[in-house]
Amino acid sequence: MRIDLHTHSSCSDGTDTPAALVAAAAAAGLDVVGLTDHDTTAGWAEAAQTLPEGLGLIRGSEFSTQLARAEGGTMSVHLLGYLFDPADPAIMAEQARLVAERRGRGLAIVAKMNADGVPITPERVLAIADGAPVGRPHIGRALVEAGLVGSVTEAFAGYLAGRGKYYVHKQDTDLDAAVSMISAAGGVSVLAHPWSRGARSVLTPERIAQLKERGLSGIEVRHPDQDEDTRAELLGVAADLDLIVTGSSDYHGHNKTLELGQERTSAESLARIIETSSGVVEPIGVQW
Ligand code: AMP
Ligand code: ZN
Ligand code: FE
Ligand code: FE
Image (cartoon, rainbow, N blue to C red; front, side, top):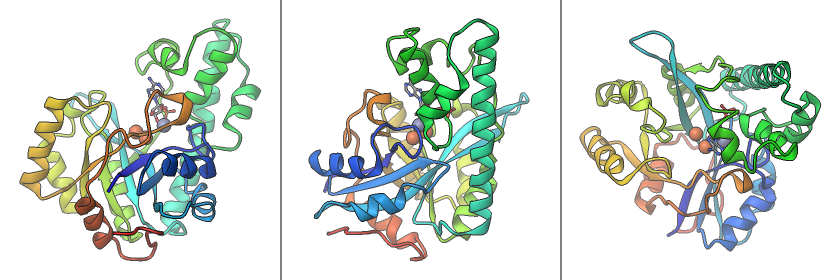
């Protein structure tokens, strides 16, 4: 079975509508796709309603979380939540807070750029986001349109870089709280690309073990941002802690140069995710 459990639609910072995404997933030969937009479940209904025959859908979200660093400050960590109750009051409140936080932070980044003479407008960035939680890739597309960079990826190497001149922090959910919140809402949590972008120093095997005590179920091992050596080490961590191992493309449409299904999850891991969930939200159309 070809299973890709981490993708983004235009309901966050991907470029395919949920309908186009499930169509592309079927065309790519996937048997199951996970829709995991950042901090929102807004794409679930359209994906379910337009799901092609023969394609299974796992409804999820990628939660923006943070972890304190020993030397002060915080490290951003992404947490995938699957099959949780989208109407859970704590999750709804936190996603609403994060959407507002993203909007304010996106506009603050644009204001910093404008103060420096970079000619993009807040109106254009909000129009590109088109109601989705604002992310740096939306600003990247405005920079591409203005002819300042050739691609969103190039924007991330300069204007949008995490340690760059225009970076603005956003206040994400505490990671431990997010794991608890997903469990309380009947869902299953999986650390997204745990050892990408410097998070390895804070997400130590000991820290991952503590998260498991709180309810963490799995870690994403096969991800484009994790090389072979990193994957081998993460597989060892998963085996030691009996965590579910996943693999995913983190597809973002045209905002990233990734193919649907380029990294995949085993049927056994998917079965464990489904068994671990409370059943409040069911997989749709998964055929074993
Ligand atoms: P934000 O959530 O606003 O902090 O923006 C981070 C998002 O941008 C993540 O979802 C990444 O997948 C995406 N991203 C990070 N690096 C790149 C890149 N080089 N090219 C395109 N998108 C990226
Ligand atoms: Zn993204
Ligand atoms: Fe992520
Ligand atoms: Fe992602």
